[in-house]
Image (cartoon, rainbow, N blue to C red; front, side, top):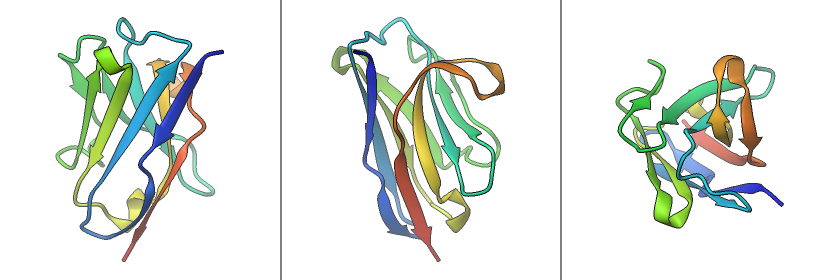
Length: 119
């Protein structure tokens, strides 16, 4: 059974940091681009970060660029999202995505982890 399991979410004050992890089971991610998305209540799912299979190429929207860093450890079958200088508007459920494509689609999704940033 293919699973992407996120962890590391929680409650943090504005300006703080969190690191999310996404570990795959039943699936080898070493040859697969990976990404992170988020969804706040009443809003559409939003792209947050993407990393190539090798880790050489990363992409971010302007809303998180300079604050968030995506990385991967293929030996551990795990992808990370380091989030610094968090803002209340970063509050959302964060989802790990395997092989993300355009328009918010992906071949695999995790169950999500809640990130709440208090002001």
